[in-house]
Amino acid sequence: MCGIVGYVGPRVAAPILLEGLRRLEYRGYDSAGLAIQATNGLEVVRSVGKLDNLSRALEGRSLLGTVGIGHTRWATHGRPSEPNAHPLVSGDVAVVHNGIIENHVALRRRLEAEGVVFKSDTDSEILAHLVHRALERGASLFEAVKATLGFLQGTYGIAVLAGRQPDRIVVAKNASPLVIGLGEGETLCGSDIPALLGHTRQMLFLEDGELAELTTGGARVETLEGQLVSRAPRRIDWSPTQAEKSGFKHFMLKEIFEQPRAVEDTLRGRIRVAAGEIEGAELGLDPAFIDNIDRVYFLACGTSYHATIAGRYWIEQLARLPAQTEIASEVRLRSPVFTPRDLVVAVSQSGETVDTLAAVRTAREAGAYVLAIANVVDSMIPRASNGALYTHAGPEIGVASTKCFTTQLVALLLLAIHLGRRRGVLDASSTASALEALMAVPSLMRRSLERSDEAYEVARRWHNARHMLFLGRGLGYPIALEGALKLKEISYAHAEGYAAGEMKHGPIALIDDEMPVVVVMPHDRHYEKTLANVQEVRARDGRVIAVVSESDQVASTLAEQVLRIPDAPELVQPLLSVIPLQLLAYYFADLKGTDVDQPRNLAKVVTVE
Ligand code: G6P
Image 1: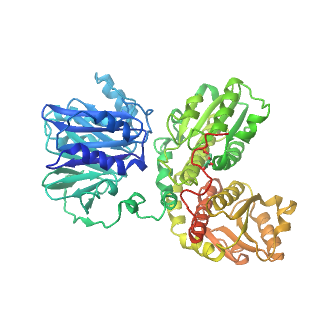
Image 2 (image 1 turned 135 degrees about the vertical axis):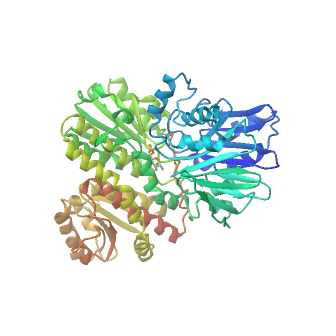
Image 3 (image 1 turned 180 degrees about the vertical axis):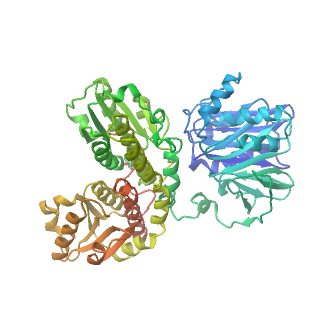
């Protein structure tokens, strides 16, 4: 999730690129850079931090070139730093890249063995070197980019410049978006529409496996196989604000719908499909430590804490290790006992939450091994930890966490499978089936999202309710908690999440004919027991809304309304059952008219105690 922009035309490129990047800052903002064709070669300016730093770095420099590319970064491989900022350069070649090159380690080793010196820790730099080598052998820029793409596994949206063909940009796409803007005597490109809207509304959308050469005369598009593509541009009438949200009304809704892609990115490069193994090195965990673990101890706050409850269940089930999860702010107050044989897993989307950070420091002081699971690369908590496993969900703008939550779940499940395999609890075939279930999640999530109208109907029926109860068992329990938290955060309705087995110990007293009760009950080993809760709610005239599997025959007839999720193995059900609850909270809040993306009193990053 980074932002790309490019310009070829008669105007000075730098201000156009900078303005485009400003419109893309929501996609990433830890470093930024530009490469401009100048009379004496490429001029490259990069800086760490927000775009204002790049603006300042450009002040006083007269960059008059009319062809250039720019990038705003959200780090995945390599911390935010000037050498890791894009454009990445090799000789007279400059490249900006979105996505993840999965085989970058192998490619890098090969080039290093041939004497190529790398200047960054990114997976993207490999592109610049490969294009440069092809140019040196006499290829045109277009052919050089095409040859380079043949070596790559992974995802990319790229824009490439070369000093020896200064009148053009070559762009290509695989899974990461790339849009071409066709203006009068000028051509632009960007990872997203907002970057281009100020200049043209005629957009050509590149498809996966296509590359294009952009000049002042327009765009020539070809497939990787060399077939010419002729596709009519589309006129885009979105306002810049609409475009930032890809046409969704709120960032939160956009982020809910981004989850299949985000989960794919969390998994990318971490599973060796043929071997049915997890790429251990990608998990930020010292392999020598794994055999010594006595206990897994999770620390987190808020939504991340809910993810760790599922994490705990998975670790117990798949790795057969004692596991516990604690709210970080509470751990700080106590005298927690950590040992050097503890694997402490600190989960935080922002990587900055002050209570989690303090608890991490306490654990480190006691000699525990701390693994951070975070979305922001090189943020405080990963820096304070022994290792980090990043979720790669891209920036999350809505204060209420959605895609960060599901990608945390994926990271936790990967960790549990990895520990289970390494410790001999899981054999090759059970590992393979767990990984298969995980890999099917993105497409099942897409199917879940297609049912958003069911969540809308429930929201429409209940958005004036002042209270709502959420129940779940096993892996459904953290999802009940998360469903309640989402609802209260953004709609300000009072919502409580409870372990269904605890219903009799209190919440049952609240149930009457005005109490909507959401019961998370896909087909799992607890189904019959949860069904008994449904009967108890009905017996007290409570109104049941059941989250059930698509093939459900029983609960769906007892409930007043149902939210269906695709049938899936129990292990991955929480990744699916949370989706209708996120949507329910969203529609409920939107119908009430609250500020969904910035709910009152809440902050995205909590750096105060
Ligand atoms: C805030 C955010 C929540 C988040 C919690 C923990 O309350 O609004 O969305 O779950 O902090 O944040 P972390 O960054 O540590 O996951």
